[in-house]
Image (cartoon, rainbow, N blue to C red):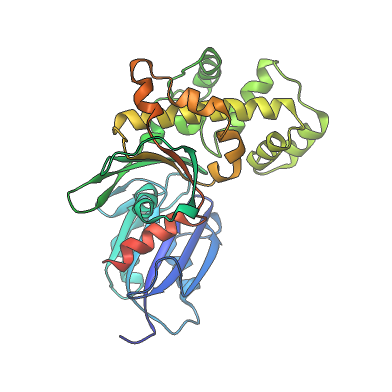
Length: 330
């Protein structure tokens, strides 16, 4: 095969799109070339691909993309972006080559069994059951969820849209949060309270509850920001605004509760993996006792959950890596 013949791989999110080229038979950890694009500034994935490939003397042989949204019959509706991606159209735009669309959590899940120890931060060592199911909960711009089951030969990644399931409060404070958000949204999903877009909702509840004052400097920064999430998160991490500290504590409690829910739903005796952009940035919070206490607070099954390994995925491009693993095996 000519060195110019490549596999095209992508991680397609509501905020950014990352594209990369790999040599057939190459290392999925190491793309030959990659680039990041702001998704919202382009009308379609095909437009980004065209720009990415411009000036590159390559022949794309096949392509695999992890997409932040449900994929049905190789058509993806990107949840937080006004795109509908049809695998057939993408294929036609790059010469009719085979194209596979994966849910982004399916892509991250593809990466999980191949992650190195250095790619993980362990929150609970637990006791992993050999070939036990694995759960993935990934708060980023939205909230993605997926899982893997052993098919007798290898782990098989399965997609899910569990992040859009009903938010179920697990504490009195979470009940107050639900009652605050329900009139505003009608349907309060876990994504509304446990994601990058959800963190400002939790903050707004804390502010409007009157429990904690909002400093003037913080009010000014939030009013000027297009994206409030980094401001809230940074202030919480630095501990210089009690309202942000309490917002983050509530966010972590909700994430822990839903991670525990996912562990029960798929009987994740092999482990639970926290992916997405947020967990690696808040590891110090996730290592506090509140996380595992809330994770395991499931009544009669508490002991089972305390035996469940829980890890944070630190790999910076896990979805791209997983899509590459899949693409290189097509």
